[in-house]
Image (cartoon, rainbow, N blue to C red; front, side, top):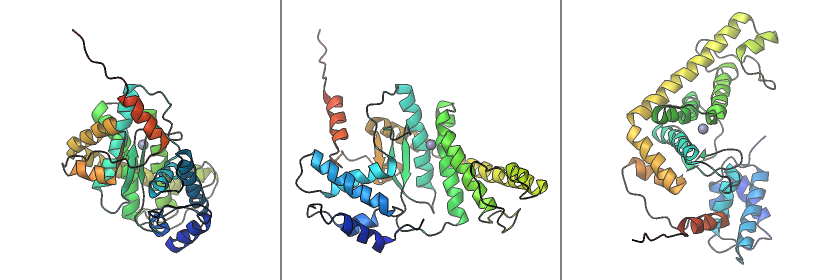
Length: 306
Ligand code: ZN
């Protein structure tokens, strides 16, 4: 489906905000610029969520921070703060997400990390969300290789730091494999197989040998496809691993900060990687979940008695 461009998003936003009271700090152009890849339905949802938050907090008008909060909800799913997570799980999630975030930060030619979090959202225990700076219409091979490396960064980080492999990486592997398959079979990006389209994916089929069963391509080509997918995965696995080994200190630091703050944004990741101290949190959004969480954290101050 065609996603609206900047002008289109701005238009959609002004239609949906027509009946919503907006504070003076809300600029639909700015929101449109910050939402590349959003569909019309996403944008309608965004306005709706922002209005809901403002109403819940008894604000007369929707402020810009409400839109930022709503954007994360639309992008990453609702926070599930009520979920009970053990410290061990939190630690694995922090190292896993730190791996994705660091590989994404270190590689050029990739979308910047918008946010990384260890607060469960939707079905995920944690999330590293990238967001393009501009509208993107096509991807080059370099960019796709980087996406695969970033996907694998989570699992590699867990292996390196905690010596474990968890099922949390399952989705990442699927995404990485699917990207590699498309590079080989649909986008003609494999030197071995050449610039050919080898059939589109149907339903759950995504490995070469299954294409062969459909008699779409010969068994030799099927083997080649498998080998090429594997080669792309292994190459990017090694690339991501080297980056994480070389920058192990940054990996540890990001994970530590994640455990402490639960969420880091672009600017904070940049500061960590440049060895700068993190600034105190300015109330980046007054979402109700965050306030409650802050209350819980600050509540009991126990003074030891002798
Ligand atoms: Zn992951």
